[in-house]
Image (cartoon, rainbow over all chains, first blue to last red; front, side):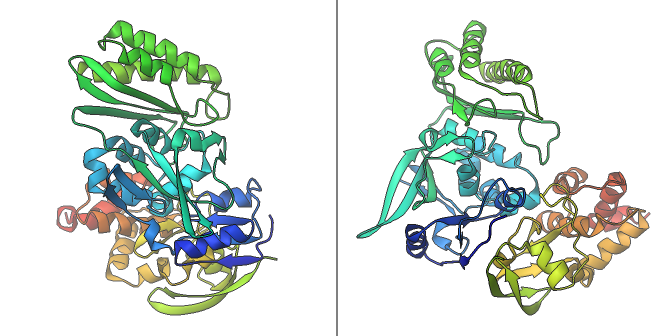
Length: 288
Length: 160
């Protein structure tokens, strides 16, 4: 384990961004992944440990003109208890309900789950289905500079993101789904609690006259990042949602995923899971 | 060696000042620096719940928390819970239901049971099971542990 030379716990975003601009820093939020990963040697500490937990402006769920804005420090428990998320983005709430354990949900933050960029990250799949973007802030010559990036572009590889070292992920923005929106989330693992997904999937779209319009499908743990299955989405959007179309969407999804074999499942098994669970979820939407 | 920091927080209701290394876990601070050994080290990665404490009224795995992050917070350990009326009721109920074998997981279960009862004062059996799913008992005593928490949640129903 590498040594930490400086520890800073700023109370304002501007102070935190100045720290990030001045040299390499490891960002600490909930710590639930940073602690075990640093102990196991998978993450090396930068010389400065930057604890962002004291920056209250990065906490909470609020409506904004584009839909909903969720502060990066919002815990999974807070998301689970939020009425706006429950009523308007149930797919995210369901994923939070399947997230680790009560103790970890109380500490883990949304921003942390995203920046870890695990291919199996529990919040990534519902956020992809919602069409979420991340907001990255950095210190500029005339104050705080923010840029928005679609989540799909932010996730670059396992544990890798498009965040520059001088940037902090400060919020997640997502449009709120329109009337008639339906969604489903399914996480498959060996036990309900504390499990890392063998696969996870979410489906969303607007049901109108037998069609699933603006269909969205996302998968976790079947590619280097959580992914959208855009080809399968296109198949679904082209006509009425029936058994034949669902079969074609499943085939298209199979062509998109790139699963690996690891301790949780073999690549063959992951493909079987994608086939069977996507078909089950789409049949369920079709019959609803 | 990593930087040492002075921190101050409330521990079981009493102001505590101590010096900790920047990379130290809250669990190591409690056990090795402050001598509160009721909180147990089980897995070190948040799987077993033996190290459960509450921070600002919510349970967390102390093995996953940086000790420096306790600064300015309100921390409760099993030593603090045991001295409360609820802690005594949980303690007696666990004994009465034979829910303690080796006892290693018991402090973590008690801390998490307190969280479950705070969220659901009259928790159903299912709510108790869901609430305790982050705690492992390797003596396989779950049924009796759940019975014991259920008896605290429904005191009249279980007074046979």
